[in-house]
Length: 114
Image (cartoon, rainbow, N blue to C red):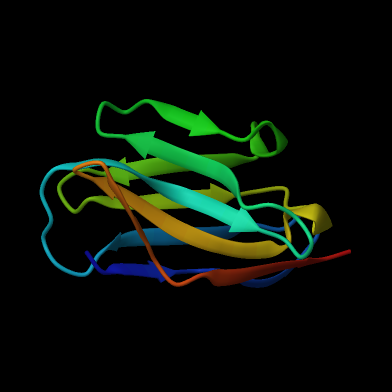
């Protein structure tokens, strides 16, 4: 499964960005889709994910600021990131789970300036 991700870039603190992620071709059997991130010197961490059921999971650090949504017909997920902070600066990786396998997209850099 090849993933297409878009969004990211440079924004000032307090600003917003929107990421999107989905498979490049029609894909069935997707159980979860979302984003992880890795900041310099830090561990890879879950940011947000949404299951087919609609259940969402968020990192504590982004709760109340980030919102993930999903278009099940397209298996595309959208991450609306509001009130961005410098500590949100990281490479964000799209993740899709199908058949127990986790597929990764190329990372997209999000930089939040203070």
